[in-house]
Image 1 (cartoon, rainbow, N blue to C red):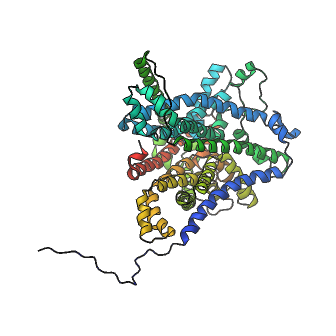
Image 2: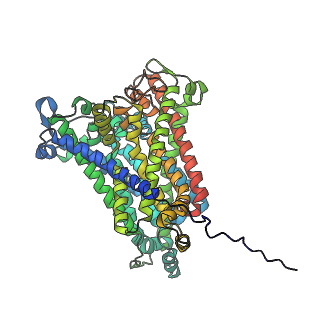
Image 3: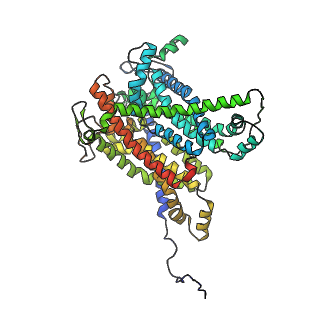
Amino acid sequence: MTTTLARDSVPPDAKVRPRPSKWIWSWTGAGVFAVAALLLVVVGYLVAGISSGAVDWLTLLTDASWSPPNAAYGGLSMIYGTAVVCVIALVLAVPVSWGAALALSEYLPPRLGRPLRMCVELLAAVPSIVYGLIGIMVVRPVIAWIGDVPGGDSLFAAGIVLAVMITPTIVAVSVDALTAVPDRYRETAFSLGLTRREVIRSAVLPLARPGMRSAVLLGLARALGEAIAVFLVVGRADGRLPTSFDGFLESLVHPGQTLTTKLAGPEPVLAGTSGPYFAALCGLGVILLALVAAATIWGTRGQKAGTTDKGTSSYRSTTRMRVQRDRLARVMRLGALLLPTALLLGMLALLVTRGSAAFNPSFWFSSATGAAGGGVRDQIVGTLLLIVTTGLIALPLGFGAGILIGVHASERISRLLQTLTVVLGGAPTILLGLAGFVILSSTMGWGRSWLAGAIVLVPVVIPVIALATSARVRSMPPELTESALSLGLTRAQLIRSVVVPYAWPATVTGLLLGLARAAGETAPLLFTATVFFGAPALPSGIVESPVQALPTHIFTLSQDSGDPQAVTQAWGSAMVLVLITAVLLSAAFALRNRFEGERWTT
């Protein structure tokens, strides 16, 4: 005897359809509006500053003399310093990064490539203040010995630090470009009898090259916008402009100045909020933002171009020493991969040995005493307060922006929104700090405020959340959308019932990655939120309620590198900051591997 199972009938008037979701469009629109508004705030701050005083653009771009007491505002030496340190960083980082990316994508099996790629990603998330501290303790003495100059502060030292910082960015984006090349091109090339080196050269690189170039441009955008790490090792000397080739070589091992270090110094505070001095500094900010935006937009356009399905280029094979060349290429590319891995291990070893104070529980749970004594309890509490507040503000806005970018019907508008989000993510954080100082601390009268610090960190986190969410939405199987729409769901109900649950894991991952980056930001907090001592662990209000934070604590201690106690305290604080960042990243990697599968890690 068989029994037929039948579904219970549903009364016609039963509410089985999802409730109307008109609020969806308000929420996603608010997210996109937040991205555009934050970008407009930075641009508006710079434009308002320029309007407050006369700016001689010709002098600013072509004169090297910078002397505010004499009303001389020439920024050429800073533009020169920015160009030099970025070129040094690219020359050192690009060959190593491309070789490491090829090794990860083309030579290593997934079981080895996955942990090594994670090592590179961990190197990318080391806070910039830690890079600056390592530059002070390691790079500067080497430059002082090589160049026979006291101190070792120089453009070359800044270029080395930047090279280490941008290597993980170039590697990660290049790996994505290489893995986007369809396997059928590799299989076709191997079937013709080509070696692996020849397959990569003739079948893989022609398709991946635009994306790999975009990786370099995105790394350049990171180098252009970095302030604190460069500030600690460049020397900050105005007016240094060589007049000959020998002078150029000599200038590399002597102090210099860049656009970001000029804006990160004390002058923006001394210049006030109006007048020709402040207008000239805002003019430097416009130049810096324009350079970063150009590199970022160009890079993302190249990355899109690199994913198109083009034919392979012609390759003229030579029979001479083919096997030997293939082996040499393999050794060189695997060696290039070992370098960033060795950098991470060396950095961790240095932090463990020099920051051993962080392994003492009392260092975590006692407050600081004097100039460089005690623990970092208050700094940890302040850092966590800033991170949690930033996350609470950024999560709904970034999630809404990412959903709208991913599901918008118009490809052109979606691309425009994504470009705005990428440009906001590439905006130098020093400009965010200066805008927050003028708008929140000065105009609104908040002074040093923990909430002002959290607000200026929001633009750092929102783009990471939005881009991670939109990428997840675009990868959603089309049958999910078709099934939902066939049931009669509206677009808003589709987003609420299908898209939001599907994209949420990637959103949480983006949130943790963004907060890991925000935890190490120093420049925005220096102007808006933190003091070195005297602030309570938890503020009692908003106005004139500063906090102490680990990044600015390390930055202040690192200025007194001649005091052994200050150095020990700085290294211990750096180890604590790295451990906090590592916890956030580990959670992000676990979520990524749990919810995204092999697509995220191979």
